[in-house]
Image (tube, rainbow, N blue to C red; front, side, top):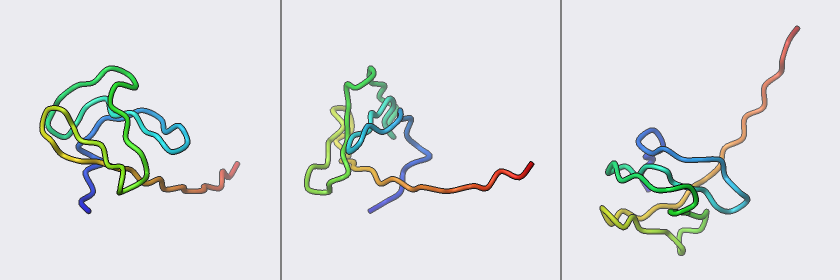
Length: 66
């Protein structure tokens, strides 16, 4: 698995789905046109470059000090 997070433009995740707005290859997509999931066995393929993608979420908690 290769981390390409910084090379892709994406929207906010919706449960198990994430919308890709611009692929690594530069292909632009309309909102919710190219949707990827969290499951490796359901990796979605870019219609332009053929790369397959899934996503993983990372949660970070920050204390706000006044």
